Image (tube, rainbow, N blue to C red; front, side, top):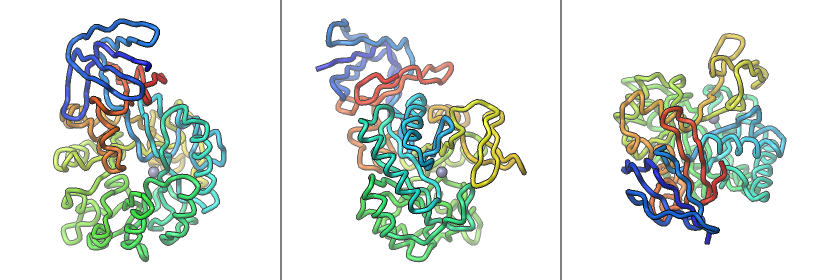
Length: 387
Ligand SMILES: [Zn+2]
């Protein structure tokens, strides 16, 4: 069996901060993580990788990302998912859920078909175990960058039809919509994580869905009801209800630093998931211009803003930079924060015993990060060095 030995690693894994570590990988699994330099000699079936004291973390899991490198998952282009997966891998993302926008049913089916095509090609970059539908069952008043023209009521039939083409792992929808509470239960029977998002729900609307199993909130604070002292809304719910898994865009733009501090110091970190929610303009250079729902967007200083009105159009964030941002803003140790970039997502998706930790028995999905630049310098997927 092919063996890889990573030496001189600074392992950062949930509750672990281990310098001078050696990681032994056999096949696609981590076999051993230990302190000190074990006898590591390269041979025909043994590769030794000296990472020179850089961080080695669990490969990131991004459950919410739309695109990169000018491609959007909803482009009716089979190449898009390949290019996005390639870009995500460069970020250190080893698993992600390509995320759709609120578009027509036919376009959603096409996106699912393209994901299937990527799977049939052997998933050569980051892994795509399923997709995330953001919409179309959202609140027309909380569309954000989603097109209100395609908003519709929750439909189990439509969800089933898409999931038949390629697994749907998550759906973001407005719980206050007609049948919204029951819809959560139907999602579970299809293996889909229901999430409340793009929502004008009141606290009691959320609790009705909660009683049907819903435990996830899409980009917490963005496009949801704010906290008010007589109706605590979705933001209040996120603070009151501990086991809601809240997605957070940690680019220091979508949430201000004080809000990041509030979320990461007051919420149970076992229920916070960092996401990028990145658009096609991520991994692109300043000056890149594109259209979204008929509106012109320009990338300037790394921020995607509407040409008219200068409103924020979306994120260009990389997963690792989100982690760095929260670490800088809150001072919380990386070993405590790192569960928010992979393990929490893995647990919710049912992969918690094999993904999200640098630990013996776990799948060798790893990212090596330069602690000075925070750029990934190597990425392993299933024990194979892909970058
Ligand atoms: Zn999104």
